[in-house]
Amino acid sequence: MALSAKAELVSVYIDRRPALVRFFALRTGSEDRAEDIVQDIYVRLEAMTETSAAEVENPAAFLYRIGGNLMLDGVRKGRRSAVRDQAWSDAGGVAIGGMSVADQPSPEDAAWARLKLDQVAQALEGMNPNVRLAFRLHKIEGLTHAEIAARMGVSRSSVEKYVSAVLARLLQQVGWP
Image (cartoon, rainbow, N blue to C red; front, top):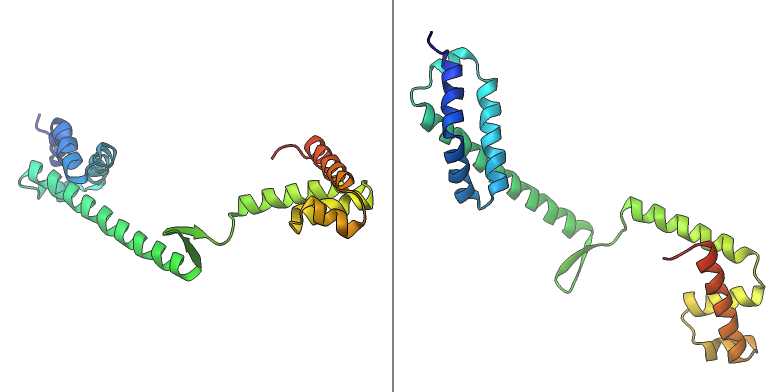
């Protein structure tokens, strides 16, 4: 019994699959990308009608042509993606030391930071106002212990105890980091 045209194409594909993977791995420089291309060739073969499969005169060349087109599509897609990413970066990004960095945190990072901030605020609620002030001046405004002591009219040792007390409480209630 003779194979249908589509079944014959699939048979040639199965026979040539290892050679196709090697061929496209050399062209793309990636074994994984080559495997993807060869798998996509199979998907294209399965999508063909019997009539279009019957029109194929050289099945091996046809397989390489499909793979070549898929490889070029991937290159074009990569270029479009690079142009789109560059436009996005130019519009809203910042470069530091030649590295592009986002000027906004990801939604997950923003939600995590908000949760941690709420936990810190809750942990600070029950503390002495002088302790909270010393902590704010040191960690938020960046003052040294000596500067805080002068501003609050207390000893440097007291400021150190205040800040240590807050840090111990935060570690206990909020955790690290």
